[in-house]
Image (cartoon, rainbow, N blue to C red; front, top):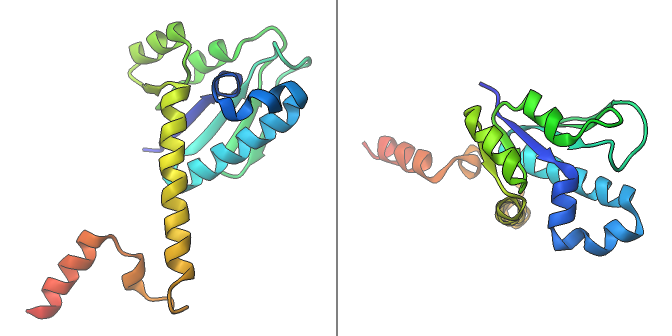
Length: 162
């Protein structure tokens, strides 16, 4: 079963202090930066991502832009991200909107708030950096052992010693 990360874009932009000044100066840049963060996180975790922005901030008709593991959705004019997400909720939703959380939980999905997602994103970012550092500081060899989880490597070591 494919797992989805569905993000209420403006909810995160308005909740994370990282975006406070950027949002005032250049909303488009804030959206692009959030898209890059969501893309990095989704690829690292193996999710398919949907980043939803409602038309309350952007005029025009619905639009979809595909960026590999993440699709950015701009809802129809007058349609909120909340209503779009309610229709499309599958597995994960990131929003601090309480009414939205109640609807999501009622449909059997797992939700986290924008604040909780920020902490989860930071943990994943640290893991990515550690993985990159470990790869960069390696001998340059492309060995299977360096890519295995510790418990798998321990199991193989037990088998080897028999």
